[in-house]
Image (cartoon, rainbow, N blue to C red; front, side, top):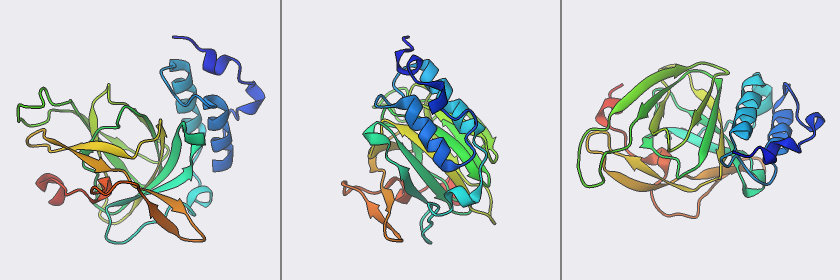
Length: 229
């Protein structure tokens, strides 16, 4: 693969170790430019390193960490990346989880800013017409400042907050951005389309922004296994 996307970036434009969220955003912009992540492995590596090197401080991101009671989690826009990627902060309620979902062909880089999260990785269903349980490939716990990478080539996943007493906060980079994905039934492998609503910082509150009328990813019903956890 060509490294043309990154070789021309002046080193001084990229903070080696971002000390705050704004430095991280500036460095991500410098690395990805108007290309986003794409298929360049060096760009993916540099973005992952930037996400790892930033040490979470709540004063950097608390204004974006808006949570609405009664929802499983919220998706709050931090930066729109000129349309080539977006950077979101997700706030996870206690004992809440996402459905099993894909990423619509997008690269996903996730950093845990506060709390704990679990990631369950699943293989894709073997056939769209054959109903069978989804196969879980692995399950891993994420602690504060951990970074994980996800793409449809790796599989499907589910993110959950195992704590019954504390919310969790995570930073997600999606390239390219997307507003629809598929969610999967663990027991049958059946998939349905779901809207991925993003909230934008308004004057001072956030307001929901979605161009789709289908059920939001964060509102999809949980499987019995998650509901009972």
